[in-house]
Length: 158
Ligand SMILES: CC(C)(COP(=O)(O)OP(=O)(O)OC[C@H]1O[C@@H](n2cnc3c(N)ncnc32)[C@H](O)[C@@H]1OP(=O)(O)O)[C@@H](O)C(=O)NCCC(=O)NCCS
Image 1: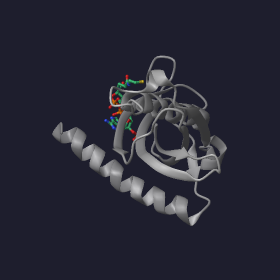
Image 2: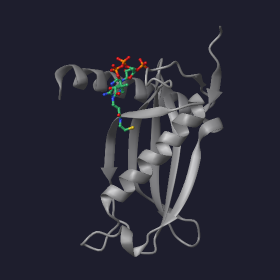
Image 3: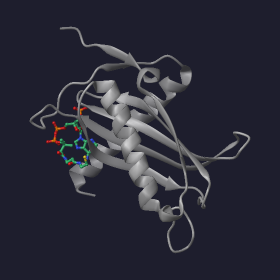
Image 4: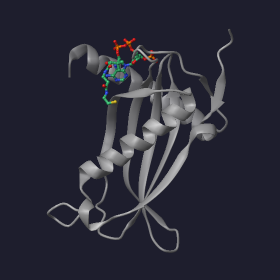
């Protein structure tokens, strides 16, 4: 059977939160673990949409905290598939603080690898990704390099 193909725009998600007092750490900033939870969640939802089923998070890399966020800040997360293998998908999640005029300042970027699994937890094949823009093609090429590094790291237990 021919492998189905999807666009990144078919599964991409944008979500917004407001930083509540219970999300702050002792230094009065958004707790990093809270942001990591949001990142993992939105990436997982994108993976489920792309693959029409359950996924698990295999790895998270390039999780880079660029600047902090504070109480009442509006936090925007955008997530899209950048690469697919056989059963795995790479999802890029960008996080911004958005002001009341819609101006966004990046606070984080992360790449997650999700693996689509069947009801027994066994990896299953995901649809291909059709690349529509030059930006998406460049992301795909960069993702191939990241994948090689991940395989190398896994081999070396690093
Ligand atoms: C992810 C997992 C299913 C991979 O199992 P595995 O035996 O290595 O499976 P495979 O070798 O068949 O690899 C399956 C895919 O995962 C990818 N993969 C495996 N380990 C990976 C890692 N550490 N980082 C990125 N990708 C990984 C492989 O490259 C492969 O991709 P492909 O099918 O697109 O080529 C397994 O390690 C696992 O269950 N981990 C626990 C995940 C989990 O519970 N997460 C918790 C949060 S939900």
